[in-house]
Length: 284
Image (cartoon, rainbow, N blue to C red):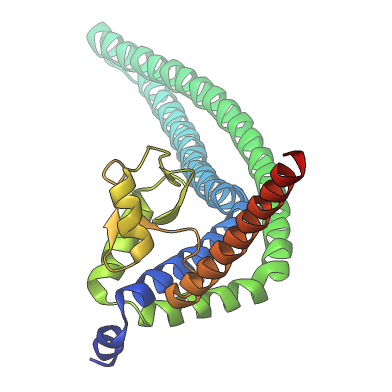
């Protein structure tokens, strides 16, 4: 309610000046962000990359343990098969006929095949373990390199932030104070235009009869309306809010200055006219 009460008391000229000053402050804040450059984004990218690599390492460690466990299990199966073979060989010594002997021989043969299969699986698991260990070594080394890069970027960003922290705080306070002077509708429009503009300019001055944002020509009548400061005017091409280049100077003061300049020009013309008349008389 307090904000609405303040904004109602402001004239259109004061609103335009508040918007323009807000734009200047926000542009200064943008310059600080540019000074930071791509560092904040690079820091976030590195953090995401490191998190992804750590997840990969965790999966590789799980895979390594699974393969090691599988080898242990296969060795246990080999031991079990050897026990069975020994048992069957002892039973062969006590068979009563060839049929029992052949049956035990088949069991022994089957257990030997099981041992060969387990040994093959163990070789495969060991090969996988070697691959996983190599991948783990590469990933861990890459993580160390990325962490080193991240620390460097963070330190660099921290140094820049320390240098600009005071200025950023002051500009943010000014931006908030100016925002309180502007009615919600205008502030919303300002923020929307600013977010859509590539250079962050929502309020621009008229320079050389053109919009200071998109550089399209502005008709003379519209330029006159902008100089009069009695309405909010937007560029019909880019939608930015337009103000005259002397918006910081109150209109009444600007009119007095223009009158004084006209008087100086008129005096100069009058003097030139008198000198010309005097020369004409002398010549005649």
